[in-house]
Image 1: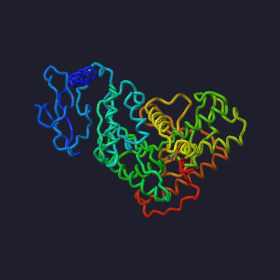
Image 2 (image 1 turned 90 degrees about the horizontal axis):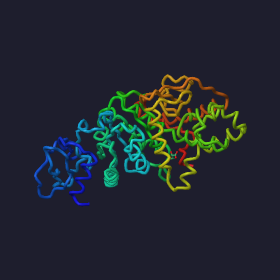
Image 3 (image 1 turned 135 degrees about the vertical axis):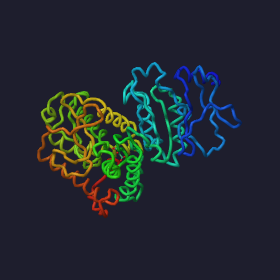
Length: 435
Ligand code: LMR
C-alpha cells in the first residue's frame, strides 16, 4: 500500500487529532516526541489529521536496541475527546496480559480488542507481557492487532518487565506459565511457576491499579493465584481469581449431552475446588430447564462416576487429540469469566470461580483459593452464593480437593511468606492436562 494511502486509511479509521506522540526508550523512560523533520535513518510511524499538523510523524529509530514498548500505530496518542464516538464511550481501561505471545492469548487478544468482552462502548489499552525469547513473536501479535483496525483498541504496548507492563492495569490476565516438563516433579512445577507468580504479585502490588482484577490461568492456577495475592498485600485478596470457568463449561456441555438438550438450558453449575483431577463438578445443585439435574438425569452412577471423571480429565483427553493443551476454549472461558464479573448474573443463576476462601459460608478451610459459586452485580466484584445444598457425596469430594489445595499451599509456603515449605502432595494429584 502506498504511504499516502496508508495515511488516508489511518486517518479515516481514527479521524483523530494528534496532540503528541508518546513512546518509551529502553523500556523505562517515557518521553514525548514532537513531529520531527524527516531525519536520516528514521521510520514512518503514522500520520495525523489535524488543522495544525498535516505532515507525517517520524520516530527516530537510530539505535535498534532502543525499542519503544508501544507498538507501531499504537504509539500515537489520540485525543479521545475529539472523537464523535467518545460521547458514548467509557473511560479507557488498561488490560495486562502475560504469556501474550502464546496460543491462548492469540485467541483472547482479538476478542478483547473487538469489544465482545467489555462491550462496544469500552475503549481498551492492551499491555502485553512476554519473555525475552518471545519478544519477536510478541511484535508479530502487535502487528496483527494493528492490521485488524479495531476502533476500540487505543493502545498496545509490549514488554518483558512486569513492573513496566502492569503499570496502572485495571485487569491482569495471567496466562503465562511453564508447562510441566518430562521428569519434573509436581513440587518442582509449583516452585518454578510459583516464583513467576510471586514476582508478578509484587509487580501488581507496586504498579497496578489498587482495584485491579486478576485472573490466573497459568497452572496450577489455584495455588499460583494464592501466591500472587499473598505477594500483593495492597490489593484486596477478593480481586484474585483462578480460572475454573472452562471446567464449568465442560460440565454444562456433558450434562446437556446426556439430557439431550441444548447447553443453554443448563444452569447453576458449580465447580468446587482445584483446577485439577480432584475438582468437583456439582450435579446436586445444577439445573436443567430450571429443574434439578438429578430429577432429569436419573442415572446417579453416571453422574457420580462417568460425568465427574469426564469433566476432571477433559483437558488431558484433549491434549492427546491436539498434541497441546486447549487454547481456543480456554480463551472463550476467560471471556466468560470476565463477562460474569462485568455484567449482572442472571436471576437465580451463578458462575464458578477460584476465589479466596476467607469468610466462605461452606466450611471450607480459610486461606486457599478454591472454586466456589459466585454472583456479581456487574461491577467487577462478586459475592458467594449462600443457598446451595450438600450431600455426603459432594462433601466427601470437596474434602478431597480441599486436602489437595492445603498440601499445595504447604508446598509453596516459602513463596507466600508462611515459613518453610513442606511438600507432601497426594500421590494422585494432577492437572487435567497431565493425564
Ligand atoms: C485444561 O484444563 O485444558 C488445561 O488446564 C490443561 C493443562 O494442564 O494445561
